Image (cartoon, rainbow, N blue to C red; front, side, top):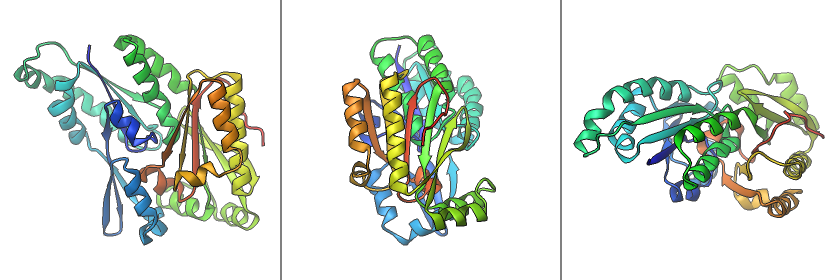
Length: 315
């Protein structure tokens, strides 16, 4: 059985990994004023965005995912020919309509694929499963990496589906924004009142950085730490502790809103890298996607792994 994998632009995995393992992309369009950019998970394009005046106005961005029709067209015209079963893994549906659009499109896809496959000389059935990762950004990388491992090991679609749906429940995502005023402005544009003017102003004055945690689609602060570098160090230490305690998959995903060398220079990074190596955990590092960047802001850091035990964070 030919198994295909699809993620959306917000999934912060290295573009080289996506290409090497034939992971297809549902791109997101980002509009800032008159500028329109399509997020194809191109790190060079994202870094160029950071070097322009548009980055300062990123909080104004309007993000537009593939419509139901666009998802349907992609699958019917290409993926339903190239594969027999496709897993489409999306950002949490609590933060984006991508899951709902893909899920709605799946009904049309399963009604429309037969003539296309028959014309390509394939009379076997086609199946599609849309999976809500229940997480975002770096943490979205956990499911596709595991899907690649299982596919390469020759596992069938039912086992892969059950494994991915279980992992989604236990994927832990963490975010640390560098600029609270940016986050506040962004949440206001999105109609989210989770960061108030008072908390953003006080946090900026006192240099307090929140550590945000996402699991099962719910996002909220689990720590408030003085200084971005100290907060990043505490996050890396927390990730290392979870690695030593045992993860559900041998995968740790990190992403950063800028040059990766900046992230690697943060305190605690080298120790986390060494801990992953010692415990045979593969460490993925990616420049944040444009989609992630406009939501977190320049210089933010994100991490993701799969482990039981919830969001307890020792600061």
